[in-house]
Length: 233
Image (cartoon, rainbow, N blue to C red; front, top):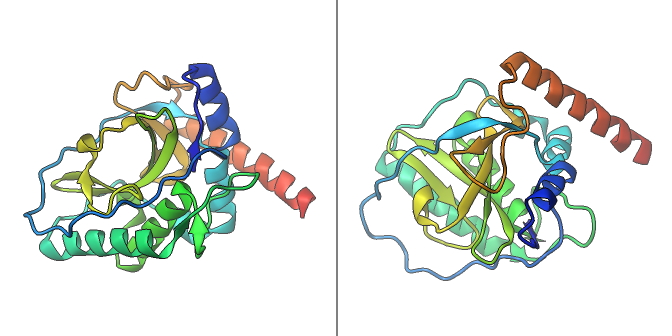
């Protein structure tokens, strides 16, 4: 998922509301294999609640197990854990061929060709299979320097947050990617999303809303999309 952008904030909010699609595709870049110590990072600063991408809600309808998370947690970083991040990032980058969605944007597992959102959800799925808790693996939306929107998976650790990106074979601290970070999924539920820090690209649509009301909002969106999904089947 990289969505062509035109620099209009209103268009971005609309795109987030209806899901991501189209645009250019990020191709993996060959990078020399890591031989350095684990780089230092910091934790992303979550902001207020925002509307979840519709594609995220559809993904959770079809992949319930991948969306069950739990209380917020960060994984203790060890050389073994770092090696898992590096291995999964390189493996998925190597086995998925870059290709944009033809029409309706979907986030899919087990594909041989896809765009950035397919890379991201596959990496998250593989890390969960390695024992990583889903609550430590939020998905995050960023804007690239080209103006396109981009999805990645973020690994939350006690050493800070790290990005597994199909643009880089190297796992990187989130603040060193050069991306403009917009929002990420909440630890407890992949259907709940939060703005990141002080991003100017997307302001909170639900500032001041209590967590229970945010959950009800997500449940309503889930039910609406589930109904449309069943009618289209």
